[in-house]
Structure formats: structure tokens, C-alpha cells
Image 1 (tube, rainbow, N blue to C red):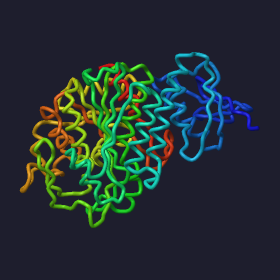
Image 2 (cartoon, rainbow, N blue to C red; image 1 turned 60 degrees about the vertical axis):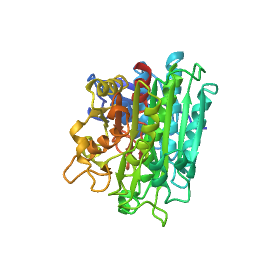
Image 3 (tube, rainbow, N blue to C red; image 1 turned 135 degrees about the horizontal axis):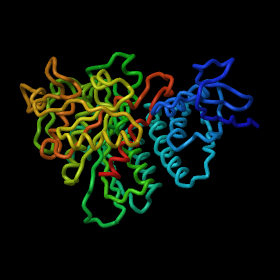
Image 4 (cartoon, rainbow, N blue to C red; image 1 turned 90 degrees about the horizontal axis):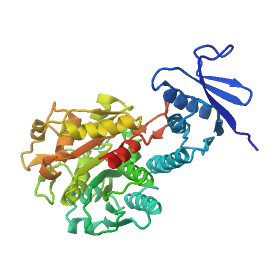
Length: 429
């Protein structure tokens, strides 16, 4: 039997022969992660140390010693997660509240990372929707109900964006409509709505991606995973508000049935959209979810999506991007991220961006004019499908949710970075 390695957080530098700048040192069966007194340094050190220990093939650890707390334990888990094996952590704490929180975070975070890392063959649009619904129902069996609208039923109910994007695949597109209603009153007001982009594989359609850009497109359902995980964590923390969740799920493939450049889609709210790029499909499916959410007249609407490369160019893969016309609304999400030790950055969204997706044949096009800011015009496109063109609505472009290759803090694949932000937003607003 393999004995678990004890891991300590240690203030101060390592001794010889490890060197003063060493992150790790070892003393028999004990691994020491050396931290400094700078703010946040302990969390980064814990996560980097976890990555190094995973890289050494150490598959079982005990986080012992006096310097561990809730946040450093969680940072270690974030770095110790490995998509190819099941590393085991003994949290080494008897604090009941801390253990409950760690369990809630791990349940939500593991589901997000594993469903996002799943292969495109395994995770079809329906599988994604059903997995999300089942996971949430296990958390709150009496409070969660749902329905799945699929295939041609999407057209009958007016969800034309999801249907058009998904009709090129033999696996039908679906919308998950999930209701978390802890009070059980059917007439209760919907407090918030969450909308997630669930493109389970994105070839780019006829605006086909090059192979190297397509290789990670199983992750294009990261927004659907993230809002589901955020709701799961909030429920585990005691959420007592009625929330509706809309996952807009499809495969964007090429076939004789696929949508084409030059097509025009007319949405339920009367807005017509000319397709000028089939690789700008995420906004087309989200539009359906935002219309449905707006019909519920909630206090807040939040959508999340792996929407644009432009957002990643702006903030890299460490931050998620936040968009809103309203300073207060954007700040609520930024504050939630700060409270949860996640990174988010606001990018510009102004009403003049609404004018930067013109079309010669429809109300708007699905891409902006040459030279326009891609992430901002994508957000402005979404705003046209929100009540009052964006009132009390915030869009998260998940720039920091996925690592194509591992680095010193994250394993390759989904990170779950954003789950805690969404959970906190639900609970605090």
C-alpha cells in the first residue's frame, strides 16, 4: 500500500541543498511548500507546489501542518487535479464548516472540469444537458425540475438560433430549461436567470477552423458547464432564491443540412440576423437563451460563454472577461470574483457597439465590421436579445476557463475558474 505523502506549507526559504529560491524541499516523507509573506503568495505557492508534486507522480497526499487554511487547501486542489488520474487529498482538518465547503467546491469543480474535458463523442448536446440536470437534481431533488427541448421542437417553440447552428449534425441540438425553486411555489418570482453556451464541438461550420484551432473545441461548452457548476455550488452553500437555468447546446458541424453564410435567422423577439461567419455561432445559440430568460423578468441575467478569441487576446488565460452596460452590474460580478479569489477583468461595452454589426439584408449581422473590437461587438450582439437591450444583465466571456496545455498552476484542460464567482453572484445579489 502506498503511504500518502505529508505536505506542509512553510514560511521562509528552503535550506541547502534545495536552495533559497526552491518552491519545494523534502524531509523524508514530508514535502515542504515554501511561501512568502506577500498577499496571495501562499495560494499561488500551494497551487504550484501541487502541480510539481503531481508531476513527480505523487498520487496521494495529506495536507498537514499549521499553515493550511480553506483557501490554501483549495488552491492545492486546483493544481493537483489531473485529467488522466485520480489524485487523492486528505484535507487534514476537523473543521466541519470547512470540510462542507471543500466538498461543495470539489463536487462542482470536478463536474465542470470532467464534463468539459470529455471527448466530443462522449459529450453530445443531449448528454451535456442531461448530465447538468442530473447533477443539480442530486443536490436538490425536491427543488429542481427541468425539461429538454430538442430537434424540431426547438423550431416549434421559436428557438431558431440553437436549431440552425445544430442542424448540421446528426445529433440533435437541445435546450435545457431548468428551474431551481426551493420554495416550491409555482407562482414565485424568478430572482435570477443563468444562460450558458453549450457548443459541444465547434468545427467553425463552413467558416471552418484550421485544425490546430479546432483541436480544443470540445471545450466550447465551457459556458454551459460553468453556469451549471456555479448554480451547484450556490445550492450547496444554501441558496434560497428561485433561479432558472438555460443551456443552449449544439454541435456546429458541416453537412448538407448545415446553416450557411448568407442565411438569415429571425428570432422570437423579431430581430433578424444575417450569417456572415458560421464560426460566430455561440452568440446565435445564446440569443435563444437570453430571450427565454428575459421573458421571466428576473432581477438579474448572467450569461457565460467561451465566446471570443478577442477576449483572450485582451486578458490572457488567467482572467475571465466581464461585460455590462451598467457600472454597478459589472462591479457586482467583479466583486464576487474578488471575494472568491478568482480573477475577472471588465472589458468595454458601450451602446455605440450596437451599431457595429450592420447588415445589408437583416437588422444585424453575426459579426462586426472590420476593425471593430471583437469581444465588445459580440457582447453587444447578445444585448439585443436581453430585455431593454441589456438592463441588469452581465456577460462573462470565459477567457480563463481552459488551458490548451498545462502550466505551473494548471493541468491541461478545463480549470473551473469562474464557478465560485457565479455562485457568489447568485448568493450575494
